[in-house]
Length: 600
Ligand SMILES: Cc1cc2nc3c(=O)[nH]c(=O)nc-3n(C[C@H](O)[C@H](O)[C@H](O)COP(=O)(O)O)c2cc1C
Ligand code: SF4
Image (cartoon, rainbow, N blue to C red):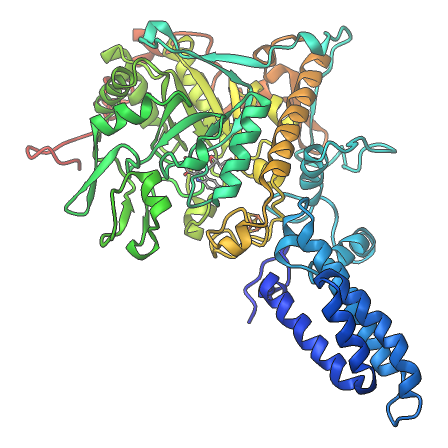
């Protein structure tokens, strides 16, 4: 039974590859030689004289010549002619596919991939009349992907004849433009991350749109290289993901080093457990390309869930990236759900300070998908208590992607990005520490509007993972966890990943980035602002249901009162909170420990 999910390419095409293409060519050629017995000499002569690519033409010509000879035989002349004609087309199309560098699918599935293109070319008709709307297909609809593909290829992305969306349906949202728009050229598209009040000595000027964490291992070497070169071209950052710093990350682009629970490139294994290694961290954080360091607490697709890389899957390149030392590798490489370097809010603050010192003052932050709000409150309290602040916090939404995750975690754990972001922004304001750090957000940001909407919800800048995968040519085949990605993006199978042309794709990555930032700037300017951070929930509206519409500010304040600054610090507001497991009453308040120091 096929396990294929919608959006991919048929299983039998997946089994296709350049080597098979050549084998089939051989078979078809033999078939030709047998069936066109009388034309054998002519064909063989042409095959010998001409190169591989001309053989197809030769066979075609031979078929014509053999027709006359075959006229005296029992065999119908059309048969060899058809076979040889097909061979000629097969060769011509297949070898052209192998020679071109624009499409990974053509490299990896010569000739057969045209079935996809054929169906693709008539897809709009089939889809429009028989199957689905443009808004269908998940996690990214056809319409979302088309926008990304067009922008990556720098094609025209304007549309005719008005919106296809039903503006009266529940959930429809829109931006409120101004009668007095600003000039989009004046819109700020860079944000300084790193606060000298926190002790940051090397602040970083980030773009408002960047590549989110995806590790080498989850992605192929060529995919990581193309992203990194694209980031360099477009002047934005590329997050390494938690698989360490590979050679593919060091191609000129700025990187944010994602430090997960496996401490790859900054840790060692003792008795099967991973521990942070100060010296290794110091050495790697000093790399010029490393602009910021992000401690990964959790990610939306599988919050508080670890992962294991089996020992037999560790290659030299993976070991180099993760700093696992020379092989043979006999132990599995574990990324547990929790950090061994800290287990309380106060210890996390101290770890942040340690990384800042060891890295020579680079911006330090952490990434999480929000789970329990009281833990967040406690962490902010610990920051105030210790006077140690991160330079940024990245909020990932439960709608986020990953290479592989248990379905229950993917579908039902963690807070969606909009609510998580709003909560963090509001609590930071309430605690009077919003100015200490920047908020970064990730969760299906893929065009100008989603970027602006996320900033209106509280982000200073955004990351995107899957949108950048689409810019690399991802066709949403949903096989990222099977090592059979047909576009060579999420596979370590070199036969597939070698089809991904790095120079073409890196241009697409930067094209997509530039077009998205331009679109966001135009929206911000249309709203009458020149700083995306000045866009607020007042500038965005949503149809809650029927005729009931609200601004984002009104909607949000229904479940979380909007705070302007410092409210959570006021004594009066804290009354009763301490008994409630210390939500406001101290950095370590909500965590309880027994006399052995164990949490319960
Ligand atoms: C293939 C893949 C690999 C990922 N690997 C990591 C990782 O190593 N570390 C991490 O913090 N997040 C990882 N993520 C999560 C993304 O960085 C991002 O937070 C999430 O996908 C939401 O962004 P998106 O909606 O733009 O994809 C990964 C996501 C994908 C799709
Ligand atoms: S990365 Fe590859 S396997 Fe994953 S969704 Fe895209 S095309 Fe499919």
